[in-house]
Length: 283
Ligand SMILES: Cc1cc2nc3c(=O)[nH]c(=O)nc-3n(C[C@H](O)[C@H](O)[C@H](O)COP(=O)(O)O)c2cc1C
Image 1 (tube, rainbow, N blue to C red):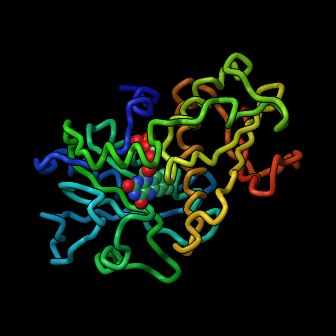
Image 2 (cartoon, rainbow, N blue to C red; image 1 turned 90 degrees about the vertical axis):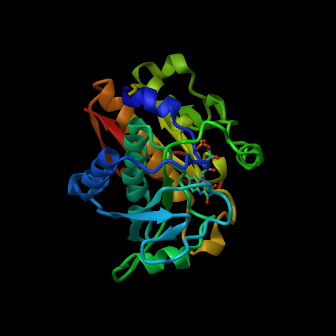
């Protein structure tokens, strides 16, 4: 399966099969998270990913790992660790979304979680260094084909299947003109992959502006006011790292070469919540 197909297929999985993950798949997961290259973000920041095996929601250390009933039959968790700053959060999310795509390709279900888990119980499992915290986790396991009524209700509440249309998210040259798929040219698929990505409460805060000569694509965040303020970190910054990963993965697969730069074009912004983050520059 190509990465583009993987991104099209991925959905958050909250109900897992009771079957444990095969030894072969575990080996691949361990290799992946122990390979330092997989832990470096697009601008060089490094994070960590740790694996916790669970049986009936209890870890090998005997700690009960709580997800407030959101997740059924997880066979383990992958726990993200980084520092709490704008750049580290954005970059770490890119790293974690790459992991999510790797797992999806293996046939393993994931669900990004930033809020609905008991951080204290997870922190007891993990050795956190100075300044480190857990921005996100994902349960892992084989997806159970039969979704619980709870999952369906949750998908309905967060409007998980309701992805915003292009004209609400993507712009041509300035925020004044919407970008059509045709105008996006070679970037149509990379931009569509941004649209299909997961985001906290499915708020989809990414806004992209493609330059008229289709060389540079600027990534902005439109913050949802007060979102996640109780958690002590700006969870929506993770959504931008996810968008970068989706975009770049598609570009690489389509042989569109480029790199990430931070060079604010100082465009007129549509509102106060909108903030420039990063740009993709085609070679
Ligand atoms: C940063 C982030 C945090 C999330 N936190 C949670 C969470 O705490 N609990 C949960 O059930 N889902 C969580 N989600 C999953 C989103 O609700 C989900 O991605 C969104 O509804 C879109 O659905 P999809 O992933 O199936 O495309 C989170 C997603 C992201 C990207």
